[in-house]
Image 1 (spheres, rainbow, N blue to C red):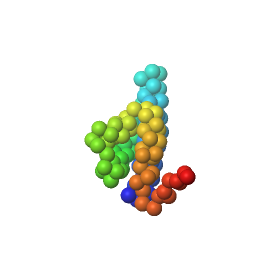
Image 2 (image 1 turned 135 degrees about the vertical axis):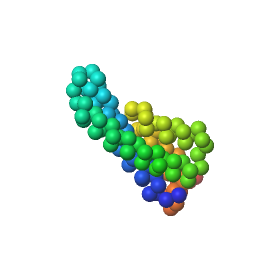
Image 3 (image 1 turned 90 degrees about the horizontal axis):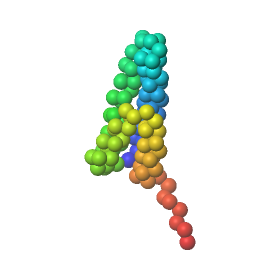
Length: 110
């Protein structure tokens, strides 16, 4: 697997997670205080497009890493839970790093 597959996933995981947090703040402002209806609409549209891109990249990574369906589903759904994508992204990186072509082999202890 190429490093670029993991990098694309990581970038979209962070962007999607940040946009979801911004969207949550906008929703609180809209429904809690009656402010920012237009901003909330704009942020929700941007987040929706970015989430679709995240799904494509996460599915691509999962298919190349040969994940079971349950794991792939968890990674895909983590983009809908605030803060979850940050934690899942770290776990995915630890698991996928050894699968990357040209990755340094782990040091052998004597």
